[in-house]
Image (cartoon, rainbow, N blue to C red; front, side, top):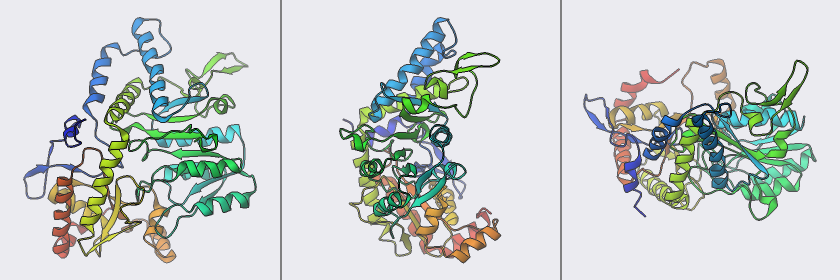
Length: 443
């Protein structure tokens, strides 16, 4: 097994030089992996190798069409095995991304089960919050003072709604703090009260092993979604996995070619899942890319990836604590269960100024803002109601937020040291950077 430093050579663009403020070029450093990851060579190789055989899926009689259909369908087996799904009972549905997967689930849950209560949480990405609001009575599991999910509040709300909760939907790992939720413990609680559990695995699946069908049936994950573009395969594919029986009922929210068995002027006979849920021409290239990425991550070992990224996170936390002007958010204990995500701010410097300075002065990519999780960031920052009302009244004013570091398997200690040096430079010359980059704060 090669060291993780040596795995850097499979990252496309790892040696790319980017322009910086002084007119020169420097080695780019990507600490924005929670947003999207770079492609890897095995993914591009798989795309290029298959390209001569590319054809329509489930429609043609030519050899290339039959081959394309076979490759597309067999990829479901790879993906199911990757997360412990059982294709006898579960179905793997291909969509564009995790956001579309959650939206599909929200429509299909309403179509299949009807009205009721959906419990989301106060730490969710907007994609696992907004799709539920216009279909269900939606409530939110609270977080504690450090931003971790309050499991006691989950059970209290399940008790309060007395059997009306149809679904509990939580992130596997927060895209803001990196906290890994105890999804199997949550499953036991949720199933005890007769509800189903959905897990947004976009930030979890690329970083650690997951098994949606544990030995204990109460620990099963009913629905799982994740996205290829956070798994080194940026070709527009997401996945929704859930019980076949669930998707056999009702009408898909998007209909058209490929979703039916028989259509007359008066009758529609829907196809079986997953075909029923995949209207239009499938994105076979995206599926091939995802399958290649999964096989690569499996060869590398997700357990070792998690260990490597955890060591980077712990080292970075130690170094950040050496800078007195840096404020860290959430649990800073190195033993806390998290993926490689760290949110912080520099005191009295707007988060976007820090991000702009890191990029323009040192070629370091981070993310700044609220990361499509505004209620969670608002709580972490302890923003008072009057400040929230100001943001509502004046939406073009600079918004509060955080700076986020997020790691991939290819990041190194040396890159972290470069980041720390750049942050120390910003702290030492605050007024210079504030004056230089204030005009670049987005409205």
